[in-house]
Length: 132
Image (tube, rainbow, N blue to C red; front, side):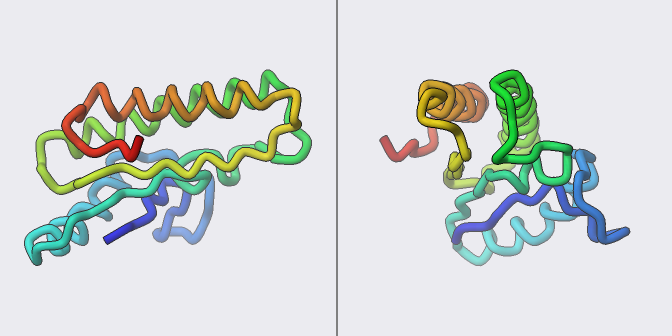
């Protein structure tokens, strides 16, 4: 079962741009536990809703420095989320949707960001399938 991990949305006030890791973890945990105890293998999806949405990034207008900032922040949050779940044995795999709107001359940034995010989760839980 694939589930999107949406850190950005705060259902308590209906806004986007949230970065409260503990509140999001506590919101998802009972749902993920229910699916896991029912025998489902959970694939947690990380994308722009995990981090980036409503944080001031305008995809089509971003400079290389803004992309670097977004990538570093995304890696940070993916690492934190993976650490929260590491000891719970709930997550079968992580799926990273890395569909940046980069110009062609920035393509190395796309590859680098994907690898950095993969490594962030891998360091926490190296036993999960990576799809390589």
